Length: 120
Length: 107
Image 1 (cartoon, rainbow over the protein chains, first blue to last red):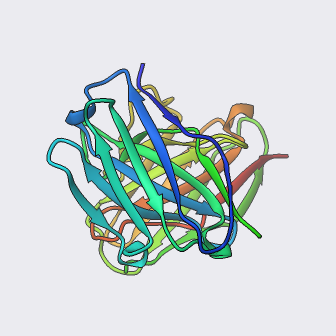
Image 2: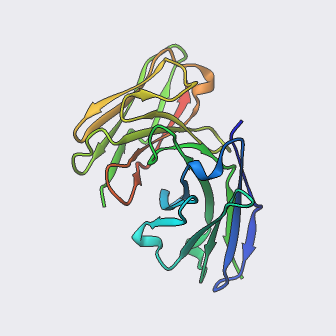
């Protein structure tokens, strides 16, 4: 069974950074890309970017360049996303989602989500 | 960026009915479209990709159609477990973009 286990919810101060994780199991981690998606009440779903763990290649939504940094650790089958210089606009639920084997731009398995609340 | 306009924003239907959700792209996306279902408090789940291909394990009462800029998701014989929000996503061009969602309720 494919499973993406995300790290817990975070409460962080404005201006700080946060790094969240997404541990994959049930499939070969390097065979699939990993997407990250933001869900907020005001903006709906937004694609942040994608990392291909096999070759450590990333693609970002221009909107999130400089805000999000995607990395992956092949030895632990874990993908990471770091968000920097946090503001209230970054308060949202963040998902990791595996690319589909039939179409790499489609997301066929999702983590449970991690809530980030930015507040002083 | 390609804008995805989804309608209606909310929908109420009776059990056994057929419902249709629409998604319009701001330019031709050449069938590069997926549909996701998000049940309350849960993560999104893939239903349809390439506009009309049913993802593994998804009930056949779900179907997708369309071309060019106009796409739709149809749910036949509505079941109680279909209560959810539904989102379209285009992946024809970067950045991938989503529709604003349709919240489906049972009358």
